[in-house]
Image (tube, rainbow, N blue to C red; front, side, top):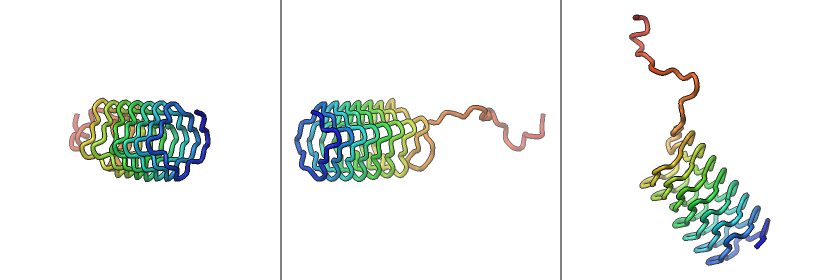
Length: 174
């Protein structure tokens, strides 16, 4: 199905099966997507602001650059999805993100309580103020990500960084 750029603003798509559909640039803001299926769907640059999508399946969907601000997406399955540079700030994301690509994603103030991020790539993602209690992060990549407290996580030492720095009181000794 080619639904490129279609306006589904506030639509009722509960239980819809859009497996493999092309929804690039579509507007789904405020839509009801409970239990909907978007497996392997092309959803780049889709507006999913304030959707209600409890239990929806986005496995292996290409959702890079999509906006999901304020979305209620608990119990969704994003396994293997491409969420590169997606804006998921302030969303309810108590979901499964196994092996998802979330490089540069904005997860600022998102609720990830109990989320499964096993094998997810969160490099350069923003997790500032995110709720991350009981999150599974085994094999997750966090290189350069901003953590819940605003600190860089998993960042590699910068080239030229001083190693083996001596305490201040030993600076003048031999």
